[in-house]
Image 1: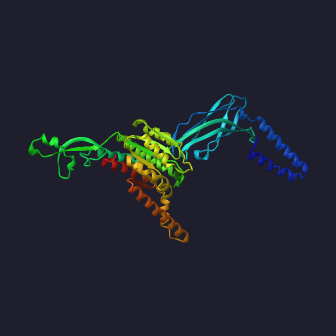
Image 2: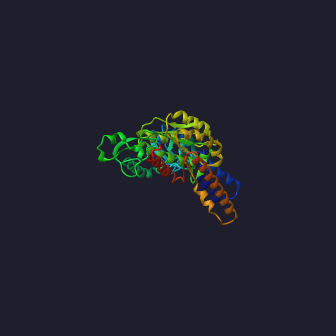
Image 3: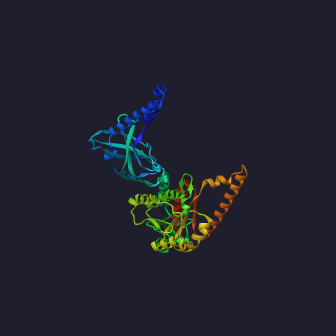
Length: 433
């Protein structure tokens, strides 16, 4: 049972008769009138417990996009149900309207549509629907919550997809180059052409030259980056991924960079796999064709949440080495922090770098750079000193990673995805994959 504002106003209206005829009898009489009217109104209200509640399935949506949620109420009773409906979605589901007006005649059913605009990635769930049914006077209401479980999967937004056309244009430009001058690991034979100044003498094909006439000069082999290379994206889901950079966790920015690189590598003909791990494997994608790769990646990434544990980099390295039998590009999407890197990642990197091309991609926090510029007062100066110290430690860690032959890519959440893709293209053009 619930009383409405009308009941309160009706009770306050009793001031008039009390003022005209002061006394406890008037007060008690007016209170009895209000109670009788409220009880009668409650008795005439339709029963919300008798309603049959059904929920239509909700399709997955990208973060920031709207989703339509439909609840169907069927009234098998003999009284009309008028009131409000409240769906039990959590605040992060972003319900545009918290309450919907309900009017379901006896023996009929109605569909009620609401709009959600989620503010967080992952699975949003609701357990039931609460209906409050008012009487004809609007003084009292019956209320009941019916079980109506619902799930909404919120996929990563993939905001960096706006960079994909430019990166694909660069990829086509690389594929259209006449030669690749580096005859190194990760290249395959393309064609023969005449030697020109600046060509690597190691690319001269002496047999083809010998078959030509002496006055026609030398012949060189041209090389192009191999296709069907392996690209393994490793998402760090440990405590460092839980830190918020701007309005979202660092993990979300790492996912955005991984999606852009995966889309680009798949178009380049490479095989892309995903491993999300901290102390145990949280998600994986492997052996997926190009057409199904992005849907599989976003479906795997959507429910991932960072866990407040240290990453077990020894287990991560063992898993990577076990899964990759030949040389591949291994992209570690993790935070470059001195404590976590020096104690966990650095000891295992030499073994990884010896067998694979390793790239460490790290999301930086623009707030730290702003903090380093602060000079307004003593508090700001201390903050700037702390930020500068963190930057020096980060620079030292990057230098150590580079010494081990690891490529390091850093950037703010909106900068990291294109920078990581550019590094992939540069490695591919140099024949280092």
